[in-house]
Length: 609
Ligand code: AGP
Image (tube, rainbow, N blue to C red; front, top):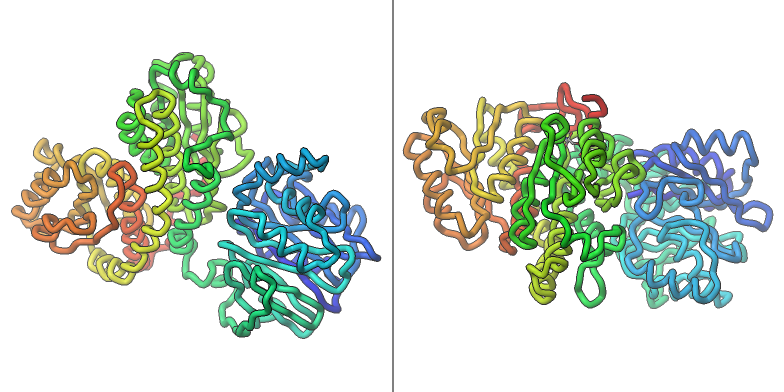
């Protein structure tokens, strides 16, 4: 995520950049900075913390003055939140300054090449590589230098660049990250979203992938990455500030659901080598260490715990290492059998959940090696665990987690493959097949979005329910628990998830005419069993919504309604199966006029026991 703003005009840039960053703070808030063209030099000021910290640093120190500048508010991916890792980043010669959103996937290779050439880096970021490459490629022509640099980058980016030789120009470019160029009477802006500039203008050019803009004080020229000029249409937005923060969506929850393809891609792609194998070089676990673990313990709360339940099936199936999954609040008090032969994995979006943090500490105290899967860089759980794998989902604002859950699944799948390669349970070619399928997940999630209207209509039929039950077996049951949580936490409809085989042991007595059941039938191996359970419930008057893999007619034959999801490998099915369930929860809550992003009694980060 992160936020970018840039200004080139006639007014003082510093206050405009700071005000714009303030509006973008919801996109990232661990550090911020600005670069202003001031008296023939690019003046950079940056600070760890919120925009207010940057304002204070500027007020107490030197205030850059100029009418051209770029600014950035950061949500850390590569490197902890710190002054050094904050953007903008200078090139080695300080001729260029860069702000960047996204992830440069080949930054490690490029950095190694640059280090060999004698470049000295001052941050741990992937962005600084872009700044250094600008020096390396400097041909005296600003645009050509940027184009050459872009051709050497893989991954996702929105970039804003200043050049000391060009006091009248900034350049921006994008690939897979949002960016726009806005036009006002006092000059032109670049911004990662319109929120940053709504106070000044509603007129903007929306940039598409692999487009570059050369932005002057009263001119804007667009190019493709071959340097050929392209024409673009000026658009006018009618959003108010709150709609703009949500990218035009009515709630953060739906915005974040829709961001999942990008979040999954960002979490997956940088961890895959060019020859298609998994590389988790952010952790220090060797093959020998992995082979030495007798057991893996996974702990988390709420949705993070549900990810652990899915991961148990995946790790045990692929790596053949026994896995135990605990609610963090239970683990810490159950005298767990954990020792130096156990790996404890703590999953947490915020990295600050009190019970998960205490479970981590308990595991460490008992001698276990610890690994955390966390979204917030530099959070307590990330800092205190031996290894950390970040989910690069970007800031998640809605209390109900969606994109963090999906990226946690991806990280756990990657870990399972890494473990399986180390134990020898999976051959490199079988691993490559799974990874190739994982690469297709973002596209398949987008495909599910084509059914959004249909799911919204189904959700309307849930509006007046008092209870709903989710059933499934094995990995579908694990997804059912999350689907049930998604529905109940935002719509306040009582819901439970049951393992299909357990129904006859008590739960079936709850079924009466009109009871709503959702049957999760993604697990190919057990679909017949779940279909039989659904039939038994329908015979007692239940209404059944089936979730099935495209082409499965068995479910269609029995269920009242079916939502189809694309086919993938059984171990990856949860990544697709959960998406319509998130949409169902969301639209049911909307139909019931609930406070979707901030459900009653809940907090985003639970930092007390
Ligand atoms: C799910 O939508 C909830 N927000 C909640 O269950 C959450 O997953 C849980 O509180 C854990 O939070 P964490 O991932 O920040 O540790």
